Image 1 (cartoon, rainbow, N blue to C red):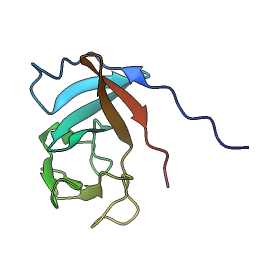
Image 2: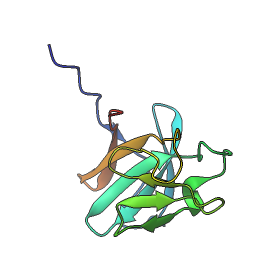
Image 3: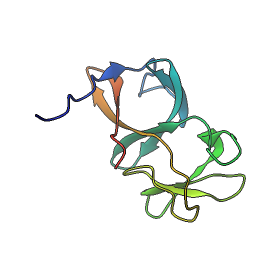
Image 4: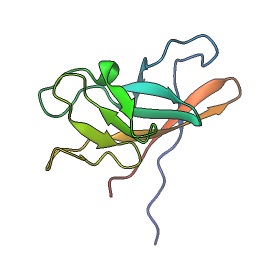
Length: 110
C-alpha cells in the first residue's frame, strides 16, 4: 500500500505582487517561499543550527541549494539534506502556482 500524499494547501501569497522570499505557513508551520527561475520552493522558517531566519538565506548552486546567511550552512532544496553540515536538514515544500495563487505540499523526508 502506498503512503497517502499530503494535500496541497493554498498559501496567503499573491505571486504577482509578493516580495520574495515571502513568509507563509503550511498547517500552521511558518515557512519561507523562494521564487526560482523555474518556479517556487518553500523551506522551514528557521535554520536548525541556531534557529536563525532562513528568510535571509541565499540561493546558491544554480538555485539548487539554500545557504543560511548567518553560518553558511547549506541545504539541498530537493530534499532538505545538509551539504556542509552533517546531521542537519530542513523541511522543504513543493510550491505550485495555480488559479492565480500558490499552493504548498511538504516534500517527504528521504
